[in-house]
Image (cartoon, rainbow, N blue to C red; front, side):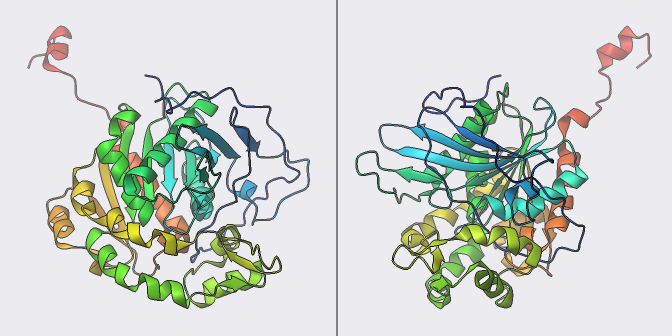
Length: 389
């Protein structure tokens, strides 16, 4: 079946510009941690998407802090309705065969971006070389969603709105790649992203036809998430309001153990920052998390029940068993989902232990890949073969 169409038709993509840097092969090393990040969305025509592809190896090589070391394409996907004018930003490595997949669709947490999954994507492709990875950037985290009348950002961060944003990005990506349908896929969400992929699996699973194999939620459960909201304003107030340079920002993330993997921090932290409009010599946070505070409870209330009832196989990876609430404890004992605990990781466990998490997700796919299942013959087939039953 065809991929679900976005709310408004999109014209064919414009010719693809080639950047002046080429990928650099990442050296193998033990990953330890990281943070989240994303590139700023650039202004594009509302009539066509603009794709940036991995450059030729004959061109100047990029450092491991460049997106081309981790993804094949960077897409800016314009989308207009009567209520908004959006430019969605995603990073993509397409699957070798879109009909068979798999495609791993990743959504970051609040304050992060698509590059939060960069190092994870690298390790996943080492384990599953034919797999695709689509990493999404939420509105005001790399994607822009503007009021068409005022051209100002729309600060609607309700869970249904963020879920529709994610679904639209997936649909626009499928259209830009000329996929006949969304490939067989696994949804992966960290923190807020976990609530979004759970919402996709419960209220929008029909948009994937029969190709939603399962979903993985990273270090978020309803009970502990709601409890933690009371401390968020204190945490935000304790962060530096600006940095002198990228290096200082990376060092702060590592020193405070917000991120524990320098390799992941190198690629994810730069996209968290933008020049200060009042003092261009300073860097400030791209995303103002304080504007989202009134939406925080909406993200996680009812999440445990939704997680247990969503369509497809379920994987929950946590940094500590204390994060399990009662409803999930009962569900886990009933075998309703797979639980993995990584006590050595911090909250950004997909960055702190990127290789480990990639391996877990790859095994989750292999275990639930319906195309690999060999069913026993039916009784009628055995009789037709002359077998006694």
